[in-house]
Length: 341
Image (cartoon, rainbow, N blue to C red):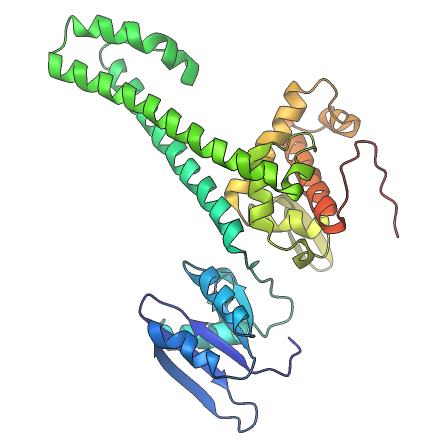
């Protein structure tokens, strides 16, 4: 990292922050503890410097606040910091490890998001949590009713069709309290449906107001959820040098291992945001299975490779296309031919 600014490593916490830096003029090593209330006050009185933190809860807030004070904030993934923790793990060693890691060439930083982008991601996370609750509730009901001989078709629709008559049948044999409780649990699934629908309407409203989100939603396999999640998660497209780098950041590029000049390609790395990667893969699968005209190259690939490989390949291409549209401010064109500059 080439900079004339002092580099400060910060280990954040709920109440006490630990800072580590080396004075550029005297070479003095500074190890400083600050309370949460004094943290921004300390940086408000300093010359602009590079402040590195581990990407964790609250780090986005502090990064925005430090930028507002004129400093350069950088967020590092925990995986990049861990190898530099020397000795026993404590706040002082963590701050020093962050200071060391941010100066290593080639370390990829985490995008700093605006409050609006984080708000949309919060809606996605809350929706995702409610969907998990709903799935757990449905599975619990299915398992409990199976104990009384009521087996229903696989999937949410199968349960919805069969559960009402199943509850009527078990009501003739089971005590009233258990039957009423089962009905209440099924009603809770309906309530979760309503809460999820409300969040989805709010996400759709933001989607209609965001030009970038509307633009990438034109890509086959990219819906409202995927488009809004990408725009909010990516941050600044300029943080990635190419679409390939963005796809690799999402974990859609293959891992590889090599020695003696020989490189062996493995399965995808599955790094990065699991939620966003899942949305892109589901969208690619929908294009391959439901689209009237799936891409010709994907059809040819499907003749010699397994379906999951084709699905991931299309998700990878979708991620690259998304980056190209956002980075170069272009509209989607189905027949666009990329030419080297």
